[in-house]
Length: 392
Image 1 (cartoon, rainbow, N blue to C red):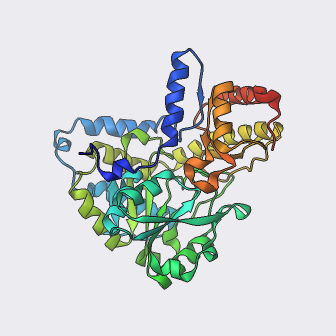
Image 2 (image 1 turned 45 degrees about the horizontal axis):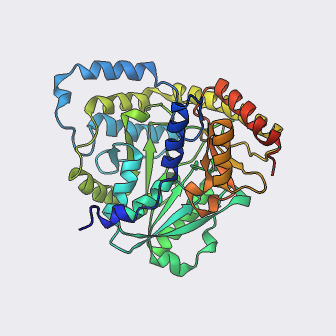
Image 3 (image 1 turned 45 degrees about the vertical axis):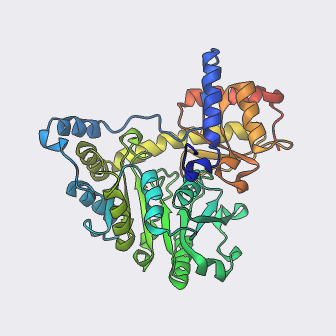
């Protein structure tokens, strides 16, 4: 008898965990490891959000189960947020669903939508959870190629009409983890047109939509006419409001997809703790200035790191969004070998590009969720690896 299900037995190895294990070993040896691998905010949430959470913790009625779809206050706050930011109108009862983080929602959506063997188009490179979600839903994934020479825009024309006819769902992610690429509304218009023509759904992961720089505003796919007929969009409070540990997010858009997801969730969880939902509602309602200030912190870190890596001869593009840098590795290295050398010789953790798919070869992802002083230290250590001769 096998101990685990085939879903566990056939799971591909998780590259992040191996580097984290090596980090723990080095820390035990007294090595000061600078972790630029994980995409977890290091900044605190808004003080007013903490105050709301404290207040709501005192209410005995909040210690019962939440409504399955999320409390009314939170769903209405999400709808108002979308109207304010994107000019779109959402029905909080049928077009908004609370999530215990957007990752949970993505995984469960695919279980709600896919039959075994159905095809999902997954961006490559892309967030590893997308492929994991397809695996858990017993679906099949096919790479949606991205054009590295054109800002990692989807190469829709690279796939034949037959592939789109076969696909059940297409995953998109802008601003992108890992590449930090952004999309203009035209990309979403083309995606929606494809989806309507070939009768497939779109799930857009917009977790980094408010972490933007230099005046760039990331559009919502729901701004495209007819998008709600085929698309849902996932949002998170982890990145812009630094509420990652609260595990709170949302999905908005197509009511049929949201209804299917709610059926799965109502049989698995009873949504997030109500005080957390109310604190998140406060963030969405009153957190515009905080989110902008938060982005300015990341922009300062980004500018310093781009400048420093360019001084080392690395051809690093300056992103318009996210807190990631997509850094080309030097000639003669693979993504994994370079990440390994940085960890072994400099005590710096970065994530090999291949953790995000085969098209990530030749790059490492650098997370800027560390104070600028630590980034300065990382640049000094990076410079010492191979005497600084690391340019491609």
